Length: 135
Image (tube, rainbow, N blue to C red; front, side, top):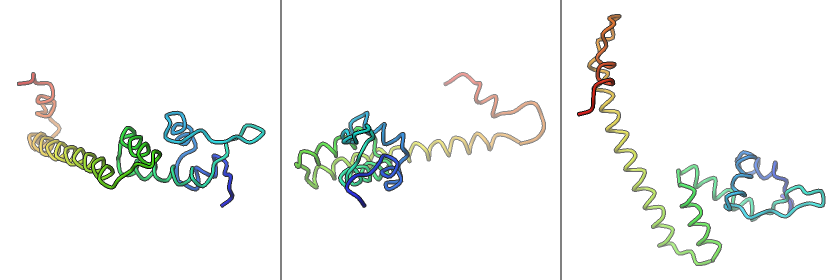
């Protein structure tokens, strides 16, 4: 890899869409790159490393604010395993909560579908249940 990459090469190398690279720059997850004399963005190996980190975090579902917090720790060179574990543990708790919500949603939908005969009659208990007043 050369010392300077174009935005297209950076995107291809890290598996991130070109517009996403620009977005991450805009919101401060990636520092502003140097520019060529013609004004084109130029990225170095650290940009590849940082963007790979951001992409992996996004793949794991970390919200932007958590990624920003992790990068702030890294940038200040004050990162500790304890702090990173805390951020990851909070995210895991959120994921588990969402999974529990999805399991409940699955059960509710299963019950709702079970009320319907699936015939060609115009009266459908699913529509009735969805239009019923709460409570």
